[in-house]
Length: 178
Image (cartoon, rainbow, N blue to C red; front, side, top):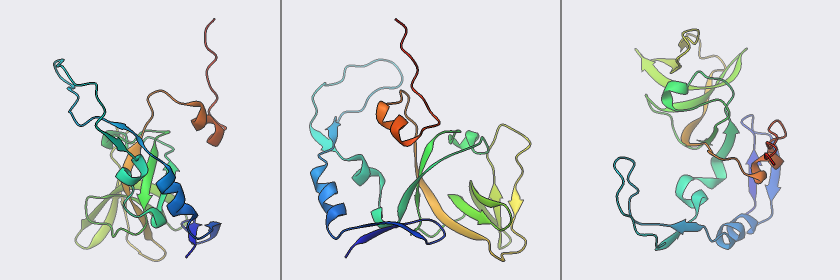
């Protein structure tokens, strides 16, 4: 069967031929993975010997057919460690639980990323921000409201690569000092 890539509204934006997705996964050999733990406190000796390979997609994505990548805009989740410009993996097949960070659709407003809380059976979209202007959104009428997916991972490169710039024209590489 072919794999379809869909938007949250259900519109198919790309259909991959049968087997292409699986062949791409098999062809990707991953990056070297070290089995030891890297100290983030006092320095300690570590072995500089890769013992395995890690395919980040296999490691981070549970349901490839239903997982999408979005770029975050805004600061309403900065206390949760999700910053403006971060990429988030969103799994549309997972059922959201109280406490999950979700992408939700609010009729008349659009989509947003917030922590889902359930208070007396009523969903509340809770920001986790250092900015006091961000307020919880209590879903009084569930007419058209929907949780579009559960955020499963946050990706934040500390040193952008050239590949990132090809997919995001808003970012331009800095000129190196000569």
